[in-house]
Image: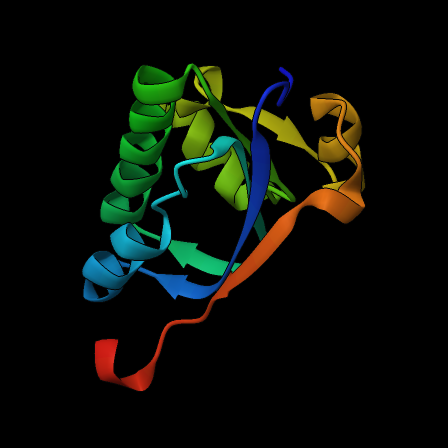
Length: 125
C-alpha cells in the first residue's frame, strides 16, 4: 500500500466511539480531496460499537472508489483486533503496530502527514 501521487492523513480516535458520536465521527472521517491514504490511530480508543465500524468501512470504500486510496489502522489492541477478526473486517484494512510502522508501510515521510484528533465531546454522550 503506498500513497504515491497524493497526501496522507492521520486521524487519531480516542475514548468510546459509539452511535452517540456517529454524525461527528462521519464528518471527522472525511478525508480531503488530495488524500490517497488515511492512517487511523486507534491507540487511545477504549470501545467501539458497530456504528463506528460501519463509519470506518464507509470511509475506506469512499477513498478506494473515489481515488484508489487505502486506509491503514494503527495500534489495534487485542480486544479491537478480535472484533475485526470476528466481523471479517481484518481483511479490509492493513494494520500496523505504530504510526511509524504505518508510514514505512505506506512508503511516506512521517513529517509530511497531516494529523487530526477526534475526541468525543460531552454533548455527544
